[in-house]
Amino acid sequence: MANVAERNNVHVRGAGDRAMVFAHGFGCDQNMWRLVAPAFERDFRTVLFDHVGAGGSDLTAYDWAKYSTLSGYADDVVEIGAELGLKDCVFVGHSVSSMIGVLAARRAPGMFGKLVLI
Image (cartoon, rainbow, N blue to C red; front, side, top):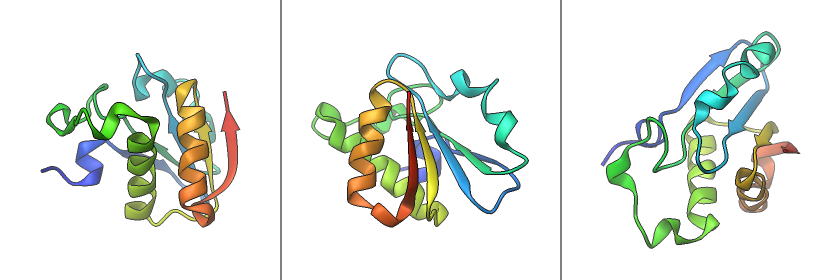
C-alpha cells in the first residue's frame, strides 16, 4: 500500500511558516488550483492533493466502504496533515471538500486555524 503522500498525490510548495491546504471538489483534481495556489506560495507553504479516486491519486487505494461517506475523505485529510506536521493551517475547500474540511477540523482541531469554504 502506498504511503499517505503517494496515495493522495501530495505536492508541497511555497516558503511560508504557515500552511495552506487546497482541497478540490468531486469531479476534478488538484489541477483546478493551478492558477490560485501560486499566488500564496510566497507567504504560505501550499499543500495540494487529490482525493482518492481523482487525478493522480492511487486508484488502487479506493475502498467502497471507506469512501461511502465523507468521513473517509476527512480521515485522509487528517492523515495528510499529520504526515506533514500541520498546525494552525488554512484549509481551502471547494464544493464537497468544504464539508470534508469541517469534518477534518472537528477531528484534529489544532491542525486547522482557518477554514475557507468555497
